[in-house]
Length: 163
Length: 181
Image (cartoon, rainbow over all chains, first blue to last red; front, side, top):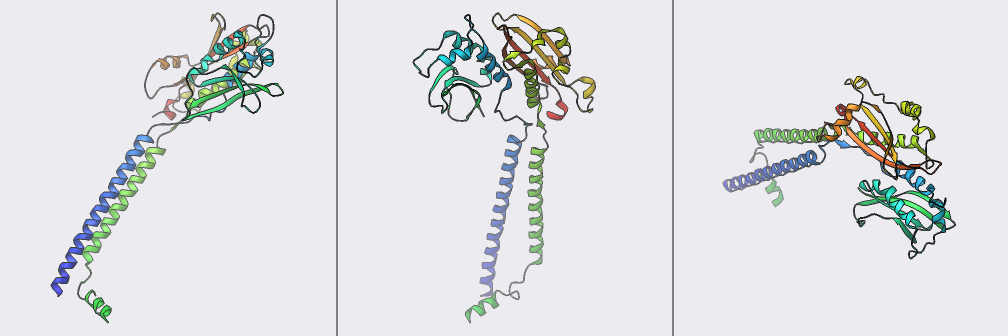
């Protein structure tokens, strides 16, 4: 009876030892994986960037763009004021081409929209639009400037960028 | 009754507790504790041991400050094309290049700022002025991890006579000793 119990006890001890070994291996593996992740993803120098909700040089360009006069002495702001929020209406070539040229340097950092829009933002006419299609995932956008033209008419500049 | 019998069978008189086994388990626990502690310390060091690189943000702020100084309400600063302004633009724009007095930073100069104003229509350069350590400019062409940060931004402006200008602001910040490893 006693020897039977002793043999059962030995088996129990073996089982317990295996449990310990397996537990140790699991702990070591988890630690190694954590260290690997820490060194691969967190080991680099941490970049500090300002949260982009404004771009001062682009805003300044936007104001200057609106103040630019054509040959007849009418500035872009007043020309846009005359335009209706109808996508079928073609904006003056000078307004559009000047916009393309003014905002093209920012295309390396963002996609840039300059739009004629209403207050709610459900109607708009593109003045400058990004060359590439705007992907919906992993992109953020912010309105750089929005200037009132009329009661329900605005000209706005917005950016979208990858985060 | 049976329960009592069973308890007697498994009592310490039949299976005395092994003191040696207890010691081994204690050592094992301590070993695991040290391994876990060492791993936590390693992970903390690997994250917090590396510095934050703020030079990109610093160069961005420098450029923004310069842009604010050169163009206001859509118009180019009236004096921007005058020699007096260009010679003292740091003072006029309230920018200073002072740094901490470590790693010989003050003697070397850790910043460089260059402004070019050209005709927006023809692209012809009208004026260019700069300040700071001009040697830093050369490092922008190099590739590597421990190098100064270069930042370039342009803006469009015009004067009261509707003359159009393209302004290019180029800034470099070194400070590699504290920001890059």
